Length: 134
Image 1 (cartoon, rainbow, N blue to C red):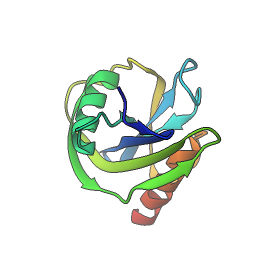
Image 2: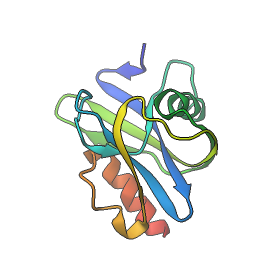
Image 3: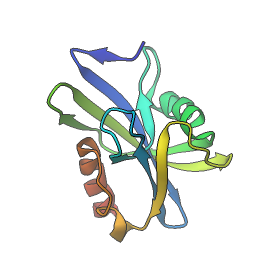
Image 4: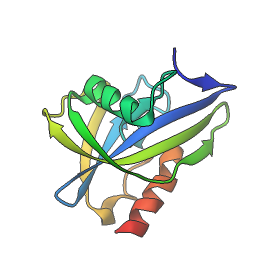
């Protein structure tokens, strides 16, 4: 059971950094918001912290263990039928090689490339935060 209240979804997302690049993941064609790009992560389960959610989701979705670092400010976006609040964290991969279990593709992007993909709208404020930091 995911943590959804009145169509308000709480999602932890990982800003995975490596060698000055940031990981972006493309949603598969069968997911909601098909083929949009996002920061990997997922819905918080009841009783779960955002950090616990990220660790669980990244093992499930990509087969990697991450170190969860700095929390960035949360952002909220209203889609037509639901609202998403994102809880972004800067992360690094501690172990494992990325294997895509849910996403169609990944890309490692330099800061100047962050606006190139067709992002899910909820992720755009997080990109703005990242661009302000770089």
